[in-house]
Structures are given as C-alpha cells and as structure tokens.
Length: 364
Image (cartoon, rainbow, N blue to C red; front, side):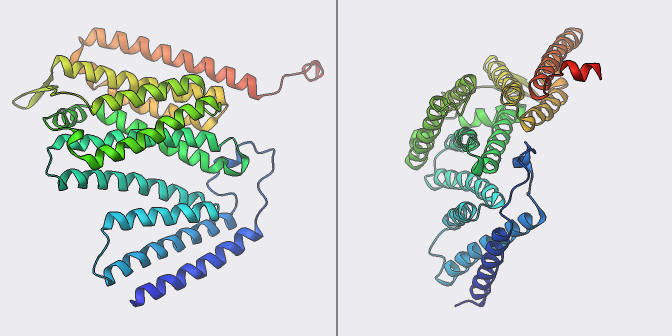
C-alpha cells in the first residue's frame, strides 16, 4: 500500500479523535439572548478548531481514496472520485455537525455537476447546445438548496446548516442570472441553442429529470410546510420554468457582430430584458424576504447585491441602448423608488424587532 495512504489514514484517525474530543468538551451554545448565534462562522475557538480538524480528516480520507485508485490503475474517473469525496464530506458534516464540511461538500456537488454534464456532452460528440444542462442543472440545484435550507432552519439544531445551504443557493442563483444578463452570457446562450439539444445526450436528460424532480418537490414541500413564503415559492417556480424553457429553445440569433461592436437583435433585447428584470426582482425579493423573516443576513446580502447590480448595470445595457437624458431620468426614478422601499422596510423591521416604549420609559 502506498505510504501516502497510510499517512492519510493516520491523520484521519487522529483528526477524528481530536475533533470528537473537542466537540464533546464544548456542547454548550451561545446564550439564547443572542438571536443571531447561528450566523457565527464558529461558536467558539474550540468549535472552529474541531471543525477544521474534521475538514482535514475529510481531505485525508478523500486523498486516500484517490491514492488507492491510482494504485489500482485509475479504475475510477476523477469525477467519480470527486463524487465520493463529496459524500465523505457530507457524512462527516452531519455526523460531526461540521458546517465547514457541509459548505465544502455543497461546492463539490456543484463542481461535480458541471464537470460530469460537460463530460457526457463531449463523450457523445454532440454540439455545444448540450452544455445547456450545466446552467439549468445548477439553477435547479440552487433552488433545491434554498428550499432545503429554510426547511432546516426551522429546527434549532440544524439552523446553521440551513443558513449555509440558503446562502450558497442564493449565490448560485445570482451568479447564473447575472451571467446571462450580460452580453457574453447572451452570446453563450446563442451558442447553446444551435441544432442538437439536450435530448441528444440521454445521460444529461436523465440527470436533469432527477434534479428537476428534487427541486420541484422541494418547492412544493416548502410551500405546503410553510418553510417558504408563498411568493418565494412562486418566484422559485418562475425561475424553475424559465431555465426549463432554455432546454427547449430553437435556434436563437441574439447578437449581430459588426466589426468590433455587437448589436442586440429583437430576440436578444427580449432575453436581455427578461434576465435583467428577473435578476433585479430576485435581489429585491431577497431583501424583502429578509424583512418578512426578520433575517438580517438576507437584508445585508440583498443590499450588497443591489449595489453591485446598480453599479454594473448603470453603465451597461441601459446606457448603451437608451438616449442619455432618458437613461438618467429612468435610472434616477428607479433608484429613488428602490431606496424609498428599502427605507420603509428598514423602519418596519426596526419596529417589529425593538420592544415598544412604555409610558414609564417616556417619563424617564
């Protein structure tokens, strides 16, 4: 057996023993008066240390699997090794209550999906259109993470895991919507709607059906179980069907190249408007969901995204395709309306969180 495997196993055993000992010694959570304890990266130094030991142990075990595979002549592909590593991180995350391992495992799942679906498309020698399975599957996985995250947040013991899932889901949603709302994203979409399609790669089709079933079930269960607000479930459903539509699009001519510049066609303007509108709606929805849920992290997350969206789009699509005076008027009205709505929401949140002032307090 490779010496690397032996060392990895020893490191895993030591890390598991130390991690279990530290977690056993530190079971108490922060005081219940700290309402945002679940937003802490670690509950204490001992908690952070134990989680890092679990991460190192998981990495050691994953490296051991990789080394064993090499010793047997690479019987398994690196994508399957990655999937096995993700399962290792997932098991250790739940048995060891490690949020760090859970986050790494989720990112690993997203990377595995991108690599595996791209491999199936390349293996079957199908046109570039089959790559549409990558963003569609990632969006459905993001919706699944968001719904499962808020379902888990209902239980105190799994609240930190729920926040982790919801945050990663929101990040993936916004990255996908933002990428498709740009000129390069539309060019990518145009190339993916060449003759061929998702139905020519049966592996991608089956994988998408599985992810679609899980994502759809999560939306329905989240709505019925009241883990999702009604309009959250509605917006998740809209996102689900928009990306499902991308898998069945016919040939699309979205951009016309003219020397060093590009001009949007009518279809290009339509999809640019759709993706920009959905992206803005998703950001504002995250902010107001934070107000309704009284979740500060959602408000801060959405606010940062709104600032980024405004800064980028301010001089992107609308500045290019609008008269300059009309552009600044429309942009000013839009920013004023958004600022007014956010201020109203902030006041509402402050009134609902802070206790009312009594007559005795006013007299003092």
